[in-house]
Image 1 (tube, rainbow, N blue to C red):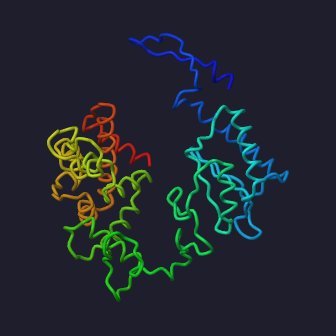
Image 2 (cartoon, one colour):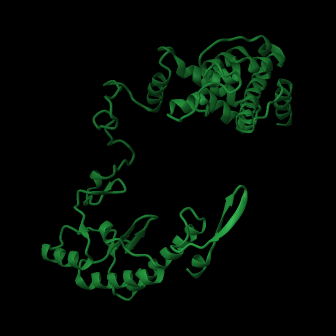
Image 3 (cartoon, rainbow, N blue to C red):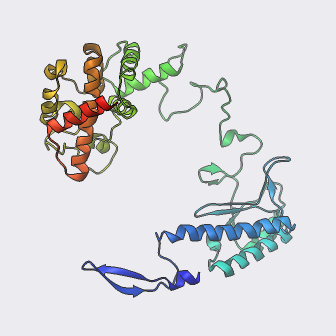
Length: 356
């Protein structure tokens, strides 16, 4: 703590450092040293508690019969201390906390301190301990970090014991805030859940047999000779999870959804990789069937299905890698304001394909 009190800071005024500010209340919030200071203080408190447990001054609680003994749990903003509900344990705990306050310079806020008693603690003992600690009593129906303080022997109130999943009622248990879309009597499995999710995310795709087509799509794409990062990119593009401006805006990010290149259309995956004029200039340079392809669709996923059905391996590999190169070009322009010529984009894609 001597080092902390002697530390000084300077501030920039017109681009030049000025003054030496010496803090009088410890390090400032956000200082990188605060993390290490917290660990040092937490280690000191933990050592005091463990020593008291070892010497019999405090008695930890067992997680179960013959289980692990727990005396304390330390978090960034909260600490949970466990001991027996006896005047002796409480007095020893107060002594430890007083020693910690003197050594660290921190003071316990009694207004933010709560006590929790087990159900078999007598009311008279609760009153004595409450008076000793000078804190409010937390009722057993309250929650901490989102979980109830008491679950009893049955953990049904706080967690689900899934096991192999056979006892979970998909339709009877209330998993969702809206009515279930599963049909009674149907054979519900992972594939069925996937199909439901797909129909929700693609309301205009209809009731066609997309599952088998999906399988053929990914079987062909994953068999292409291209780097893993391109395969991952294609998956993210097909399922519309790339961080385009349009996707960010739909997720309530305060951002203009318009394309950075044209400034007119929303920046969707389909727009940035296929439709807008700059991308079309790149595709016009690609040899083969891609050069004359003008397939129009609102979703990149539908474009991918069209390409897999229409193109062979020799055309699919340049299409996938060039799409990846277009996305990197977009990122360079978005974050570094660097423009890349269409010929250079195609050369980068061809070089990556040849190297791999």
